[in-house]
Image (cartoon, rainbow, N blue to C red; front, side, top):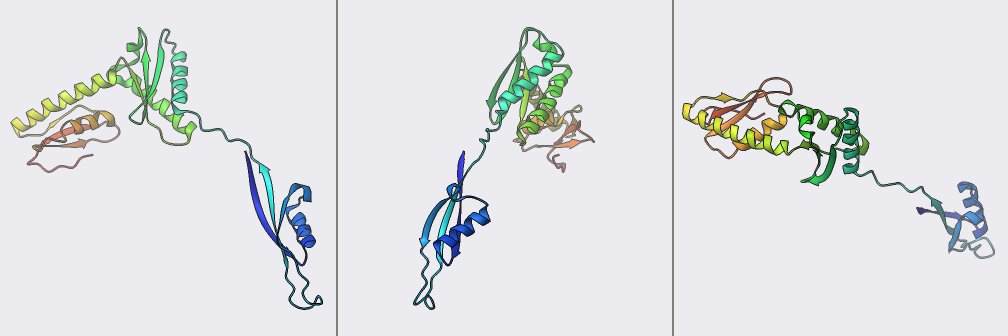
Amino acid sequence: METADTFEFEAKTDEEAIENACRQLNLTREEMEIEILEPGSAGIFGLMGGRKARIKVTVSRQEPEVPEKEDGIAIAKEALERILALIPMEGTTVKAEQVDGAIVLNIEGDKSGLLIGRKGRTLDAFQFIVNKIVNKTLERRARVVVDSENYRQRRRDFLTQMALRMGDKAKKTQRPVSTNLLNPHDRRIVHLALREDEELGTKGRGEGVLKKVVIIPRRNSFSKS
């Protein structure tokens, strides 16, 4: 890609201004495009009313083409495929697409269900590693979701129904009820499931990544986390 820099020089004469440009830019005349903006004038008898010469110098330079950053979907897909090749898991393929701003990778195949793991923990591990690879490669934050056999949606439906049942129990007994330990993604689903219920509040409880969600009747004070 070609770009250009421009400079202006002044001297008593055009020739002197050009020589100054060559010296300061360390270029020959042939390497510069020179435009006389104001010719120099010696004035009356060379003593009064003199005017300096002013020139504009344009220097073209060739810059290397900078390729656009690699496509995040392609990077994520390749990363997951390499991980699966190390297991190895034959007969599986990875389908990649952009959904609501996230890169969604879906593992397909007859035995893809084996990769889900207990409560999706194997998928979570894949997802963690691929996110790290993509974010480091792109040098910006991207969100990657790894799924198999529509597990993420089925898990979301399960947690939503569980939250609603536990919410009904909390309202009937007027006592707080708690979920099992959940990761941040699952806790968010529970919070969202009960967000519109004016009779209930939700609060995270515990230390570390895994926490419980406490569902509290509205008469109790709470704060979400």
